[in-house]
Image (cartoon, rainbow, N blue to C red; front, top):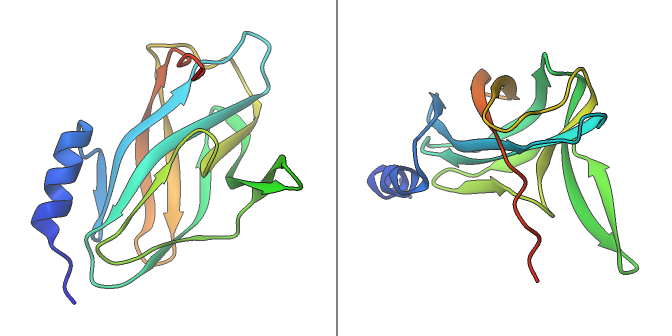
Length: 147
């Protein structure tokens, strides 16, 4: 079945801006919460849509703002959230994957400087088929915790 690219494009226009695009992939609303002045860890959240005809896999991430960037996820083991490094994430044709607090994220280890609200930085996402896609990440003020 061929994906409905008009519906995916409309969904991304409703998200704000399509952001980066390459080989059928569209990346929207890439953001990172601001960090404390001495924080050494940060996170990046975004949405990836696959408008192409076949599955692609997010296999790596890199950035100049940290010494390492990892594709990570949270899983619950015995009622305790545990973070784990992921080898790859499948993005099915016509589908989308949302990275959000408490779920998938790009983990930034050993930040070189704090992430300050209002600033932005680049993250390069590496996909098995689409290759490297540079993404602009906007640093936002931390969102208040849900009650």
